[in-house]
Length: 115
Length: 421
Image 1 (cartoon, chains in turn orange, brown):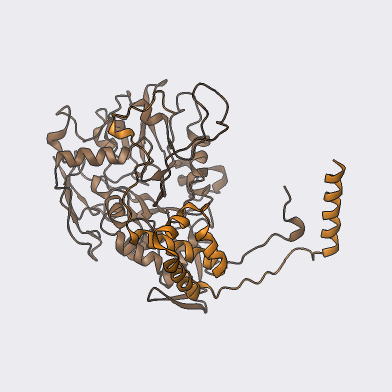
Image 2 (spheres, rainbow over the protein chains, first blue to last red):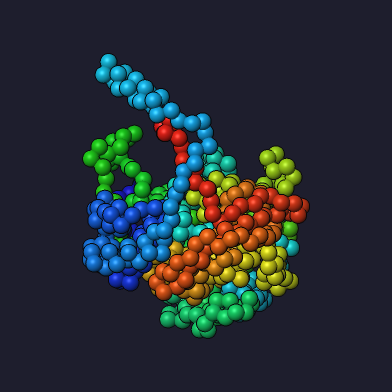
């Protein structure tokens, strides 16, 4: 941190000044979010949740400015382009024995209960 | 004053020395669409070069949050303001981008830091600039992601948290190192000629024996990448990890390696290389060189503040979500074309983008082996087609370094090892 408190009269220490961003900029951001996550395999519900959740400030900010109808249209468009991706998982490691996972789970639970 | 040709401005410009260009030039491309500001590059550099007493404030590599962040604070706004004051209303690009590699971004008719003579203080100065204050150097990323404690309570974080400014609209991370400019302002300003550009790779270095710490380079560098060290009373700057570039790093096996900040990049946003130059400083055609392709063929990578006039050799793929006027100020008039091509990449660009960070060796050439079409779609009226091509990288010795495909396999940690920490 600086040695001195910022001098409010100094224009160079003004921080947090929002630069103007028009609707077009918001739309670009919304497309980027929707495209990126559609390519990661998110479906319509998860994508919309991403925009609706205030925790995700950027996406939610776009949602607030553009409105749900526009965001839904963007999501649908991105899903139409990228939503066809399907991931098939092939495990190159040793086969997983579901029983072993259950054993480990119960072992951990027992240890926690003993504590 | 002699004239040099600045291809990024599309014209000749004044420079205190005759143009002298290396055989190959150190250059790099950062894809800042992908930067997450993890600061791994920053720390890789810090732990290699600037960990000693007297270097505490030095970050040769840094990542700042734009538009409000900067190291030193407001470095870019301050130099742009000085230039605007020197040439009110005249800092304009007057001709549009062209297909000519001698003027790809059109023509800039404003004043560069070398041409604003009437604003120089004292009049004997050669370059327009300013000396940042200690406060400006001391707080990289002030008010950004750094948690701080309450004032007067040392060694503790603030338990209620601190509130910095929330930028509700947009921001992006700008990773920076010395641009090892073709017309370096630091070199031009040094009264002792202690700064030189190496003829073999264009790396700009300060001769520590010749430097007397006048700080003219600190004042002149518009990117503020020359820094003064108080306890040795000389200035220091990024050395482009030259032992690695030379292939003398023990790890390099005699082959040129990329710098520490490049090699450490978690987000795989960085690629660095050595490009061939013509005798006038323009880039020699080298069609299969990845940096030549990104800068001069695909034109997706643009110089940082080209209007300053130093012909920086750091190039950036601009972030596609940021308002265009801001980006045009930062990267020049090529922004719209660059974003259009990056957002809807063609077959070759998609393959070249896979070259980023698959190896720490410097790539001199690439080839593409064509693969099958794997995807086709339409987005915002534009057709997207993906081919699973294989791109092959070759090193200085002409031997293959690696090959990689457009379609990457995704590895999922088995459930049994889901959390092995």
